[in-house]
Image (cartoon, rainbow, N blue to C red; front, side, top):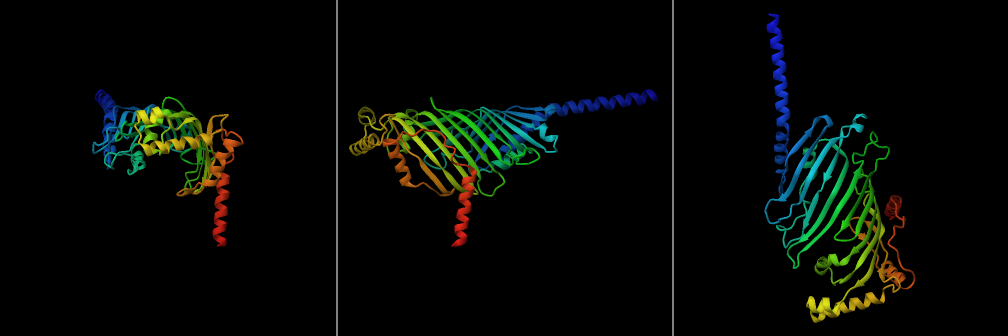
Length: 372
């Protein structure tokens, strides 16, 4: 009887081990099926994932070859794709009793398309991506890391076609949960840097408060050595004149308190060539009136150029409501004249705009409303 009892106990242990192994082996396939079904819930877009790897000992799982495309087949570029997306439990937060996680995106790419109609355009703004993300990763996300990212703009309806990319993006977004259990500061931070076309860099540093009803943030941005020739197709399509040569630098600071914004943009164009006979007349075959307009633009740019530094620059103040910010013309014109005839402007951050400035602006506007 004792021998039979021991044999029955071992049998149930073996059965339990077999069941656990079977569950562990099948879990990635079940997860893959669930994720594909979740991505299929979107109305305008659909998606699929490749292999799913579950690392129970780390409290993590990774998805390979995720891709999201437009359903109607009119847009060939996927809205989003990534070679790997990894979700993991943040153990340091778990010690404090908070169930939050981190997300790492490897080689993610977002494609925006401007077509002739809604059918052959895509921006993804109509979908509830937050709800889908919550289903894929039910834990609150405290930290997001991006490695080798790309943001691409396409317009295939013009000749030559437009394909512009901000590539090699490295970014980090922290403290999204906005909890004092995890951080002394309730403000989330964002830092990113990327390359534009064949030359040039774009760097952004920002802090934001996710708890406010209207946007509350502080953003600093620097663009350096962006070669305008790489954007020629874009400028030919969307700008009223051609830029045959030159480079762009820009510094911008913006702060918003509950939707009230304050800041400035400081664009600087170096070695700009607006008109060339060979480029505009012989190659582009511009008509008479277009040629006259571009020659006039070239003359104006030459007059207001700082001859010593070979640059055109200004400082544009920005203030008011985030929905309809005000950019006064006279200060911008004054900046052009100052750069041309008094002192060459530099594309450096002034450090003159902080969140406190926007909060003060908001308080003044509220006081003015109360007085009226």
